[in-house]
Length: 494
Image 1 (cartoon, rainbow, N blue to C red):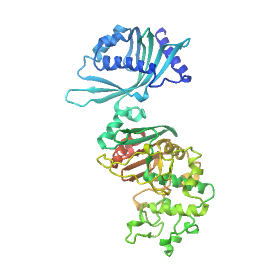
Image 2: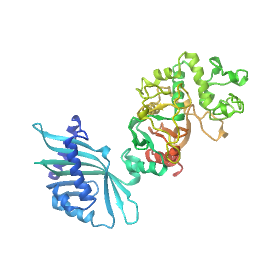
Image 3: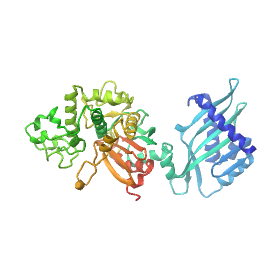
Image 4: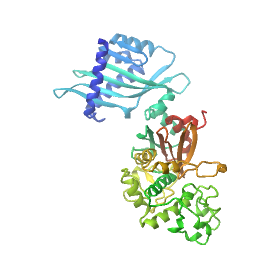
């Protein structure tokens, strides 16, 4: 029992520090710990500099490893490192995820006597003639004690070791280097990612650059293209749920587009048709030879993805309620969900220096930003990962809809031979495993690809934003990495 007492003590120390803020990266203590971390890993582990390792190791070191067991004492630690790290047929390399690093001071009578360091690191193998490749990730907690002006490593916990595949799947944002490799390989400058587990938004992360040499901040603003439509769909369904709107009442009761006012199909068009893309319209009216809005078929008798349908619905909603779309959204979503950084169009409050600039398939900033000055229900919503992640969580937990309406939303609205499954505002992937299914939507414009996919039965979801033409090439990787049914969804597993 005695051997585990320091472990329990370290656990209690870590817990007690939750009420004390970690020190800032620019603090003197943080920099001191980074210096000894570099001696431990950059010199000792990566370069097998045993003298550097001896300098920062306490004589009575205790090292607890979840796979390698327990090492007691400085001499055993040095010898184990020499045999297991420095004498094998490939070179292990450790890389620290600096964003995960936390440093907490330990004080006595107001004076610092030690520090708790915790974080995540990755281990790579370097073989002759090969690029270094990831072998595992792990979490670590170190207890450093100060002796005069020197720091000594007193206790080590090394745990939660995972192989490359598990690292991506289970450690939500811990494998930054692999994600950034995906970006480089596919010439995608930036990726925003939100992951949902157990019906909760577990976190958001933004990788890469807004444009060349401009790192993307966590609050980067993305144009999410057609991911505007799910928000407008849920807004409409909220109105239906509240008894203020009806799915099957012809929208002509409130508004009719002048281009189709003489077409009898305009009196058949309903909200259900629009949300399930059975309006009969092309995606955009300029695709017609006339340049005007036309019905290609009677509403409800076929499927054709249509942005025009959503803008038609927008006009009807604005006409009935006497309010612009952005005001309706503000009252139903933006304010209740605290989506403070979401806008339907460019305003003075939108900070362009946070905007993810659009890039072509070669990764070049070729496309100029189009700054819309009016709202569209179909396209060009401006938002952040955190804001849209909040919206995703809201949908995953039912969005305040009745059980019956949520079931209607996630039920196929199309004929059996349509070749696609479409609910109300969402594409459906049914029969994944038992009763499990996914709802999803994508968005794509020049220099933009976005995706939301939610699994209502498992309580999981992902949202991804990119600012490059090749963003779609990352979607399967993201789905497989962060959803338990990811490989089944992408067709790699039955």
